[in-house]
Length: 110
Image 1: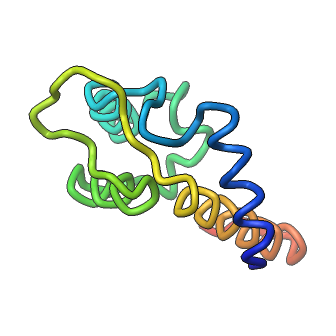
Image 2 (image 1 turned 30 degrees about the vertical axis):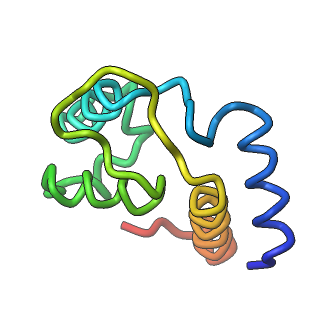
Image 3 (image 1 turned 60 degrees about the vertical axis):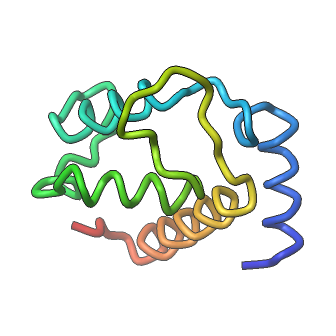
């Protein structure tokens, strides 16, 4: 992954208000979404139920904390969430690369 591309995407995430210190999704919403994903809500899992099967809350929470750079607030305090734009851009590029490899091979990952 190119660091230049990651920096460009990070800046775009900041400009769009998707990342930074004042995002549209606060801690309460993040915890709610984690639970919706784990409960298999079809509006949240985007056809990834096979990948998510057996995932614990702790695993999902750790993934959100890793890719956003900030753990969701377990106390569910109100307020806006914080998302590290560089870490998020790197995660998106990594996921895109994995999808490209699987698609080029003509298969599914699960």
